[in-house]
Amino acid sequence: MTPKDILQKWIDAFNKADLETISDLYADNAVNHQVANYPVVGKPAIKEMFKGEFETAEMTCIPENIFEDGEWAILEWRDPNGLRGCGFFQIKNNKIVFQRGYWDKLSFLKLHKLPIE
Image 1 (cartoon, rainbow, N blue to C red):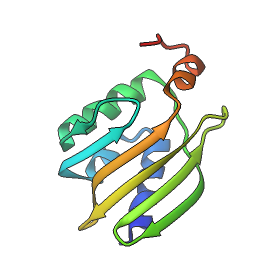
Image 2: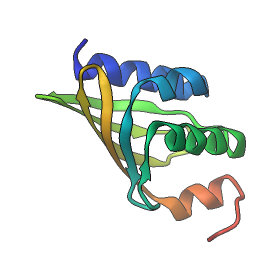
Image 3: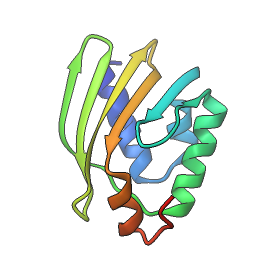
Image 4: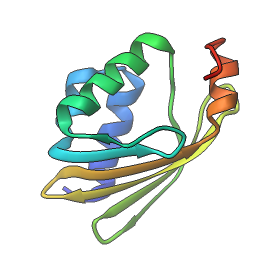
């Protein structure tokens, strides 16, 4: 599978809030660093992060652009409410080993009426 293929599976699982499928896309020692938060290290911790996020807010990822460069897939996205961001996924052996995401956390918290940290 190409990095774009893995990314498409990730988007599909994310939009369904499918915890098992999304967490299975990560390598055991993967790192997910959403720059508005601290890095999350390891598949179990990433799964727990998504569990909390899926329980807290209804989220939808609408891809605007998907690029691929070697072992990297790059996603430019928006959601139905106007929030925008981008993500970089390093994929090796059909597993996400590193992910970095950029998005406006303050706008997200306000949009979902969550406490501002």
